[in-house]
Length: 448
Image (tube, rainbow, N blue to C red):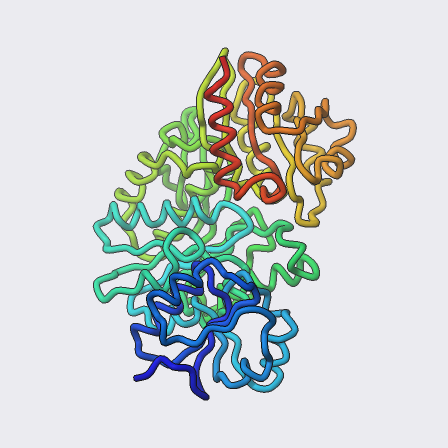
């Protein structure tokens, strides 16, 4: 079948990482399609022209008439479906879909689907490790790592997908074996009208789900469900019927399920209450999809955490340094401050700031007052953070990350921890949160 654009075709909207995965998939299937992108020179343009020269590609302002020649627009996550040209096409009967919908149509193995404002990469990776430890042929990806369509394979026994709200906007029927929304806190308020709109996008993950996992500590994670959908709970309270939680035996804290202790918390390499919640979430998801307990616990014992997610870097003069550059929103920073703050003997010296994406920083004030010796502020929205945190702790403004590390080393006392947990995106000063974390690690390593 020709790949040249024709009526009743599909059009891939957006030529980034997921857009290119759509191109590869449609070409493999021999389906006719075209590609459009609002940018004059999108990231994968040269790759497309080199590998698929026969595919029609249009760059620049979206042409509604051209879009309306398609039966389906496969919209990349980077472009909001509220974009006027997409809405105009939809009003004329063109279906708006995305790579995750297409993946769900072709996946033959069960899907574990994971979203949330925070911790989804850690939990997704953990469930993948648990499935591998149980001997499953597992494919892990989605918003994390490999695009979903590139994971498809006849030999795969289980898919574990991390999904963003942007991906879920165009997902109509995922039909996951088990789905979860780990938590909800303000994020991407520059894209959504309000928290409710963001919440509704996240909850599309539950469409057609055969089972759900719910965070008992976060009411916004609970979907509206029929009584026939099995539910497994997790949370930092005591475990109970169909619930994973924390219990204490002989003065020691354990991860537990129902009324049984499973694993002493001290055996986890990942630190803090938020990571205990992540471990419980992964256990709940693995349990729901039928993974045996022992391989799951073994995977937990071996898991050292993901880079830039409350990652321990070094100890110097009795002070530990943690890279939580992935904390690009208030909820993530909150989890790190409270989780790590309660888990160390001393206080935190927090490094925060960047592009706040329109978020409200006021929720940080109480935990900063409780756990932080000082807060070092940098980046575009440093002043907004300073206003929100006024009176909670000593506030110090710096202009570079290197300066922030130097000042934090001077302020921290033995038993303290220095925590980079910005509560902001990185793009005002850095290429991405990874680069921010790498430069932080280099500066920490360079401390004499």
